[in-house]
Length: 190
Ligand SMILES: [Fe+2]
Ligand SMILES: [Fe+2]
Image (tube, rainbow, N blue to C red; front, side):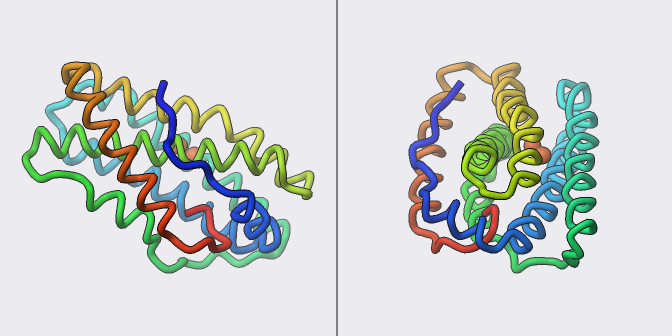
């Protein structure tokens, strides 16, 4: 439905695959945050009934992903800790404009882009990681993330005119590419 403007490098894949403990710990946190983001949107926009039709299930699904990652971590004796705040997520959230209607559109589109970026990274991991169990994990998660990014975009299109949605999406995709290409490569999902 849309294309990211920056491709995650092979150097990122090599970095995370050489430190799977850090990757999994960060990923577990990301799943928890994805669930919290869906709940926060429900809290912030109770009048948008279309959100309450789909976001509760999404929040549950993200928590299920969290549980899958945590189980694998436990199996491998990897402790679950809170990583430093993600510069990527922080910079992305800062892109949301203030007036309520703009904030609504921006938060849906930022969520869609973050989900699409996860999907891109899961694809690299399911194809390129040497660890078979890790490849299987990301293969099983890939489709959900693809569904999530289209879901956030379709929520925006339900109540906001298409040209407005796509023009803001293009602007945010450009910003996202700028943000990600400027960040150092570390053994984290983001
Ligand atoms: Fe997820
Ligand atoms: Fe997701």
